[in-house]
Image 1: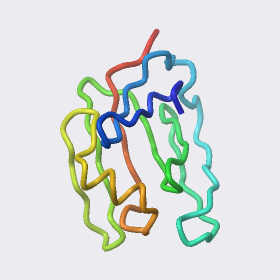
Image 2: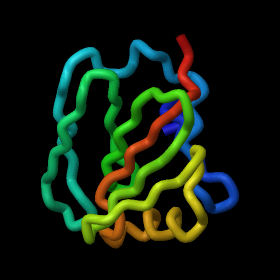
Image 3: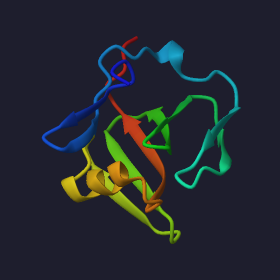
Image 4: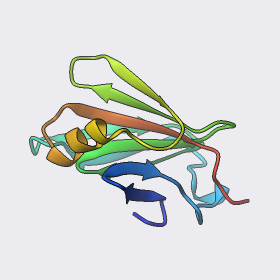
Length: 114
């Protein structure tokens, strides 16, 4: 997780990649297969220029951007937008609990090496 930049700072999840290179992002579409918090097999389609992994059984889709941001997708179909690269404590706690509150996290990072 450290290579992908996932850190816990003061009980808050942060996405701060420091050694992630542009070449590690997908060159073509792919599918991320994973088990959700209920243990059900799921999949997420990834596009070229994205990178997918799971954290606390929630899929994380990372892509390069000019400005860092995080979009949290909730189980009721709504989203929460976070400016920057760090979740709030309450958001992090819900993620740690693996209660299904969050079903996907889209991370836009401006911290990628050439």
